[in-house]
Image (cartoon, rainbow, N blue to C red; front, top):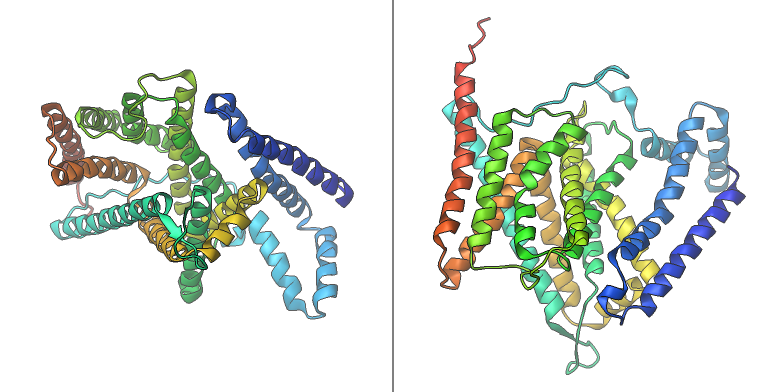
Length: 457
């Protein structure tokens, strides 16, 4: 495909996307029913396609010509215009190769040989000392996730709900409402943090075998999952939300079978369903209700959106685990860098096409304390990502899904204690069912390990 065709295709995509953006700007003041969610989803996908299509063409071109002379002839222009030295030329070639092909020469298993799916890290060691060590690590990760997510919630509510004084007119307060800009800042700070860690410990990092573009799948699925979750609140009743979110463990197990070829026993599926049932019973019986509680019906659109949320979220967790299971495995900081790199690009493209990036930056420059709060929010999110990736890397996506379910339940318990509410009888029963299922699963794994005969060498 010649460069002129690329340019025409790019211009066509930009024109179509620009038309949709203009339509959304004109329809911003219309009732929500007049701007249905499929149109908003199409707009998002068109925006992402302005990045994805050129990237896909570049990947195809590099893969097709990486062994021939055409690939080097294309890059020879860069070497001629930048410098006569070899280093810049090699660096650009290596970057394109790492992006589109990866580094298969470092792979520890022969090309074409299928890697048997690795069982999720078993948190039940055989000795008591190992068991205590694993429990301490798991509690540390859980506490880190809990603290950072709570801090993010407080800071995000503070940024969205409070007004910020103008630097030139302190008596005037204005509110900030562009939540996607906050996500963009979170990705930038996480990207910089991971880059600093990688730079400091560069010699300790394993070679990145998979192509860099594989992290874009995580970025895309995570973004669409979050969008489906928030969009579903407009169409789904509170009981439906609760049951779907509590079922995350089961969906994650099923997606693990598809994405990673991970096999689970019927007993493990039973424990997952029991956890989902107990969590649903607890959340439905508690007096605290979240967003969407005022909606008393569940539409077909709501069910589609909730299904999209569960499927894309489960894919994200299992795809990350699949990358962790490569030989040599991708480190959590490499994954953190790759995911946030593509997420920052996706967010930037969306903000630019909607015309809100520069206005958001201008708001930050003109208002007191806004930049500080956004930085603290982004730093909390970046640190939280380290705990999340560490949990998935060490214990697998199922344990992480269980942690997030328990976190939601404990948040309600803490809210009940702080505000003097009372847990209902069925809420207590649901709480006990969840922890009983977890205990039974742990006990069975421990018993199975005890029955396995030790090898004598």
